Image (cartoon, rainbow, N blue to C red; front, side, top):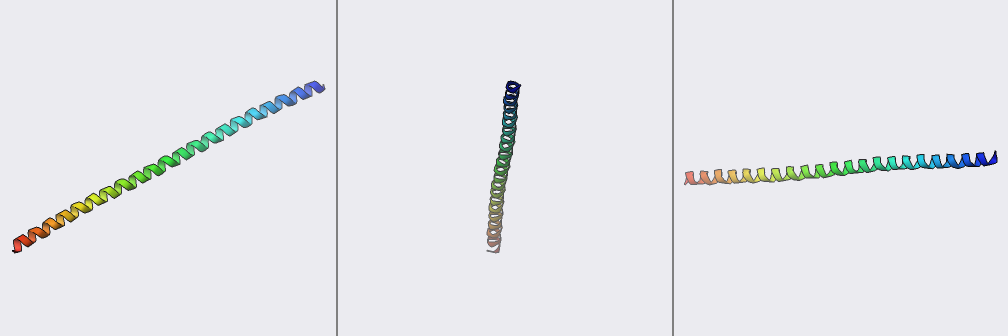
Length: 79
């Protein structure tokens, strides 16, 4: 009876260890996926901000160029 109890206790310990390892692996996998998702979102947001900034700079340059052209044209007509 003592041997059976000891073997059963060892088997139970092994089962608990296997379940614990599986749970830890699952938690690590979920955490990794979440971190990866956050990194992708951050990179995407940074890329959007950069693209938006570039578009605004380009629009600003076009507006300045058109304003300069209009002013030059007005000066030419006035002269």
